[in-house]
Length: 236
Image (cartoon, rainbow, N blue to C red):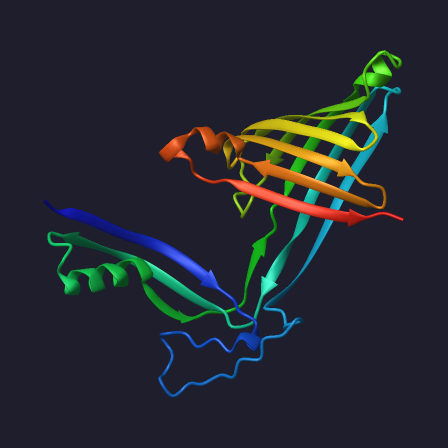
């Protein structure tokens, strides 16, 4: 059997000078000292802003609109470019020389490059909120907020997608110390996501537990990712 591999990629890199990074295409005599700390020198400088509004139509219904991450980052420190445009036929995966050639095809060749700019994950968000207990005027056990949201990304930067995403979520508070949360989203980068969470109010401390991609627990070997978050907050 033969395996054909085609490499056609371009990757831009920028790094803080405090990392002391030496690229593999640089001369062997090049040395840089690493000085990594809590506040490293930035690899670039940018600007971002969010715009939005929120309105309550009545005690039960509310609407919101936002444009988020409007801006970009200009990367100007330690900039390099790796590009690959080649092909390789593998007829023996145990041949180390072919494996090394495969790495070269995938990695490509590196070189210095000028400063470059990347946009942020700009997106538009529209949401509708519904307070169930307000609609039923107190004839409901506890409090419940239901939200329907629409997310439209304007690029395919990390955590963003031009594929529209619709989400429906709810938080139910049957008592003043316990919260139950769940929601689903369809579309976007993740295609489908089911989230679930619990919240506990212990007085001056709040505890929250949440899972993302809960549906992955039922997908077996086809599961792509799972997420778990635990947090606490002191309130005074």
